Length: 319
Image (cartoon, rainbow, N blue to C red; front, top):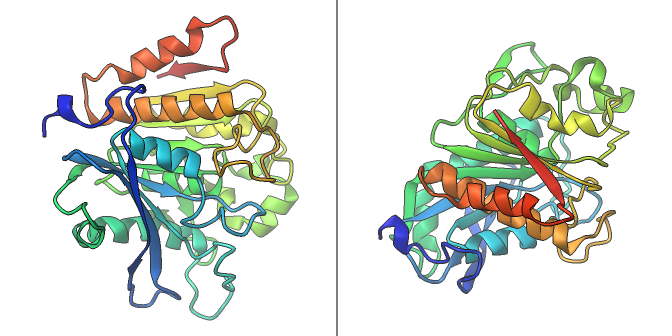
């Protein structure tokens, strides 16, 4: 199928969505099978793929394949196949991260995404009506909060393994673009005492080699005081400290939930705002659409629309 005939190339024509879960992958050595939700438009071919990494948070099921419906459904209704794994740090699993032989969750999360790409043909064949419809060369990754940290590693950010002092490189060349939503920023003196002690892998985060194109989305009221002493600007670090090409979407008055992207009407959203969620949906879709299909004007159109009205919900800058 040519690019011009992808389903729902415009915001105004969403396609019905097929969502299947759990799609189960057996992984030798992993504490439990890797379970995924796969959402796709019911029509169309040569469909690009988004791997969506969940955050943590306080709710039991949002940190799993059952979260982030506002994003997954929108992206799928507009021409992407969205694959959502349940990572090993999900509250639905309640696994002990300090169990003998356990892989640190910051590493296992990235490894989950690599395994999905390794067996993308198997996943595609396991979902009814999906076989033969994916474009395996057009893959993006997105993640919220801790999921944003996972995205940063897959796009080339580095850290030092606190267990043995080795530098970790989990960059994934099959991923062509990424979206970091309320992601953690730099380590060192930017961290709170709590974060430095309980998330020691944050201490050495280095964005200087995060070279894959990415959109960083940050709320200007996202004061994650239990993680950082730097205020809301900390969540812009993946943009500020990484080399281009990068874009930064700053959402006005947005807190960590970015208006409610992790689920519909969930209690842990402190800044419930459907208009803000709509902006995140449209701008992230448009960014990935243009990155995966050079020459597509979706990103420019979305950015122009963001500032066209009298009361914009945010601003975009790029480098």
